[in-house]
Image 1 (spheres, helix red, strand yellow):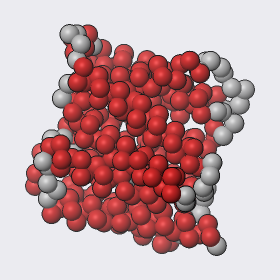
Image 2 (tube, one colour):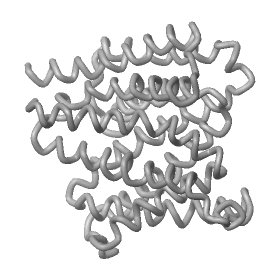
Image 3 (cartoon, rainbow, N blue to C red):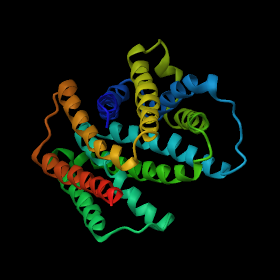
Image 4 (cartoon, rainbow, N blue to C red):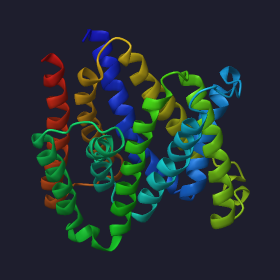
Length: 289
């Protein structure tokens, strides 16, 4: 990987890691569903000048399903997890389950072959989450870990569905999922959390900045940056760096909240992150073969 692409990759992973501690700050300003709706609203407004609301001839049903899962389910459960947990590090670790879930779903949906070594690593990654769940500080906030596991499942499912969208350009994918996500999340927020204007007025600049960060820097630059890198490198070359984002996230969590991971989080985190890294490393090695 070229040095400029390497630094850009590290910047993307830093953005991914920052999504959780910055998102936790946002949750202190807005309830979770409203926070998710503001995230996709900023993303939609930025992409709107390039988005034509065009309906593709092929795979429109897959696009709608992808848009609902990515735009609604992923963001809703991400912020619900942060809302239900006072600790951020376990949530960051739980998000790593996206990779094991992706492999399991690829087996049952795409009928891909999963070697026994990967099954062992998938099992060990879930064992690591069990270790994290036994943290005494986290026992009364177990719903947070439960919600981030659901988020990881939906994020993996969205990635699987994106394979059916190769003929649909990136702008349309982002436009549809942010538009559909905003409509559903703002309605759900109004019905469950109350009038959004009670939280938005007077203008909450601090909260809006966290939503802007999530929508533009994480969703647009982060995910868009990965698409850019995939034009130059195989997925297996880029994905191993994905294991760096929890390290950036946990470091930022310490800097912002002075949150020190406990022994359960450290041991469980090493198991989860290590397992996911080895899964991705096997992909890279198999590509060379």
